[in-house]
Length: 178
Figure (tube, rainbow, N blue to C red):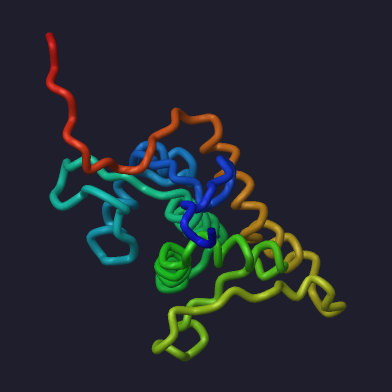
């Protein structure tokens, strides 16, 4: 028989079915909740579930945690708000298996479409110019700090240390007996 089995998820990939709370992603990314809320309000990112109104519990995927972590890293290095928003928006929309494939191939830098002057495409992942002899030492340090493979490892290690939150279920919750 072919093609009927559900995909298998390795617990430590971006395709993991883990669900993270807003507190989890804020801790992982190093962002205050007010920044995440502002980015939601501005349409930069949308939670995987919940969050239809203020105060509602939201859940996030590992890819979204990586997108927020990358946004925090770009922001910490002085990127413009438009660049930060473009990186978060682009990465949060990439399918996990595509992102894993790009990172494995060495394409570890997000290039949002708006930054390429091509707003009609969401963006693409590119290889950093680490072999460029003209690259300054400061540029090499910056490339290291913003490297998505490194940020991915940080996010997955943080997820591994958190309680597992399975995907949102549509099954009714059991009645309380208390």
